[in-house]
Length: 628
Image 1 (cartoon, rainbow, N blue to C red):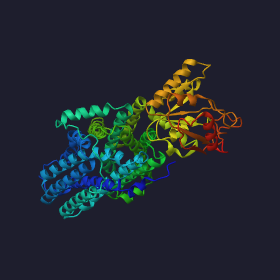
Image 2 (tube, one colour; image 1 turned 90 degrees about the vertical axis):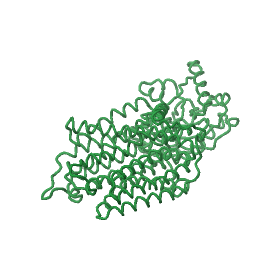
Image 3 (cartoon, helix red, strand yellow; image 1 turned 180 degrees about the vertical axis):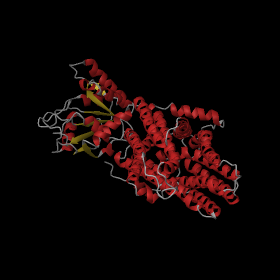
Image 4 (cartoon, rainbow, N blue to C red; image 1 turned 45 degrees about the vertical axis):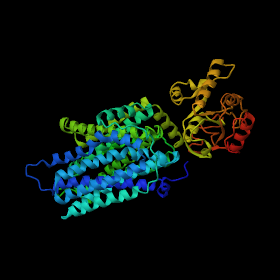
């Protein structure tokens, strides 16, 4: 498992200034936006016939509209200019925007406040592509999941803190100076932090900017959705998360009041539990993924979102009404046993939402070319905004037209989640395959590994490992950070159902030369092709499972591979699988060695001219030691 913690990144200059900068930005967004909403509802002097609800909805429109208009521009400038300089310019502009907003609050001038809100939306639309595209430049591959987890945790906690802070300041009679001072000071603090962000060079300095925002938005959307399926469908999955999030976050105030009979403090309680859930899920991602981009967590997160969404609908029925008062406060709500079930469901939705969203962001960053990364993230932001608008329309359709209750809307959203993610996982079977691998390594066995850092982050390599059980490939594939192409006996490769998994993983079927010469030759051609393309190939040179726990004699296939494509060879050994249900131990039992510790150990890489089958067998034997 990973031996470092993502929290160590908070001590690194290459991450901390950026983290604090984006934290202040998210915090300021929500202080300003929530303060404006509360001012419209309770503070500003408006004519008696003014529809304050319509003005609040206009706030949401003005903040999200810039994501449609300017995300494409943000993607372009994020590629063309040095990212650290661009962040500083954007944060400097935030100070000017907040000064306009401060004047609007002090003077109670609604048009000026709307102007500042639109400008803050523009600021966020330009900052988003830079925010996520700078991470792969600042972090090592093993740190990418942890860095994204910290960013997601910080963002949701900043949203919560900004929302609560706005409520506290707006409850005062002299709210205007407090809010005005806070938003300007936070903007200044964000700019000062951005000055410490280390240099991050431009990915595509020669890019010519297209100022036609509508044409460029279409071009960038096509660029994002035209990426390889794992990236393009991750964009869809990411936006679907914000569709669900918009439904929950938008309906929480009405849910707290209409279903729980609660006051504003109950809204704050639910938002706190939801945000803590997202933060916990984001933090756990790094540990559960072993420090690599583990997209197997995405189906896990999707299942949890559906289960806890259904449970929230189920537990919301028949909540006791307030007695002797108009509404419950948060303490009165907590006295109801049913409320703890509801809060547990909300925590679960947040927790599994973190499992869902963090690997998707990391996958988009890691599998997109550096010269296109900011524009692909801009496409993601455009899609996010589109899905959030569709979310609002969907809520209106089901609540107003179809007449559903809010808990029933949560149920419908949970069932829709099954359909959307089934489509994503069907188009990109790698999600489901990685989920099976991840589940195996975190349920039947406790997989630990040592020395895997010798496997290069890029470039070709051959892994050579002993063959103990039918799940060896799954355990190795789940431990190695890079995709691994396995060589497998063709009769196992052709097994029904499993063949789907093997084909998805790019497994190479092989036969003995005397069994089928065509399959034998084609296997070596595919192996050579994978290695020429810079991929990692894993072979089990014994050619069959061990029948007694000891190594069989290595065959000469490894020598033919290296003769055709000389690449580094890394010896590996699995320990602790002999006697498990998936081995050929005659004494095995179904529950023998369930949840046992399995070790995967790698030794130093060998140059291709050194690596013959006899030396490799000796190396693997030494790595395995006495533990079979």
